[in-house]
Length: 92
Image (cartoon, rainbow, N blue to C red; front, top):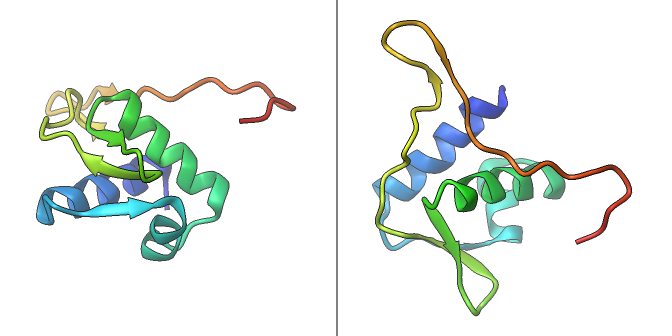
């Protein structure tokens, strides 16, 4: 599964269930991803202002739609999802 497909699946889950609130652990199980991959997906959706972190260390939908389309646009041009650039060896 591509990164764009996983982003789209996560976005669809939050669109279908507007009150969905997930911790990273719950998202790992829901999307069957490793913890690091799941965190990259969540970070990309937070950076796009589609999700936001809560004080309970979970993510919820902001109510805004993604400002970008994941995958290919109607004119077949590739549309990118903003992703944090994390250097190897840095810790969160």
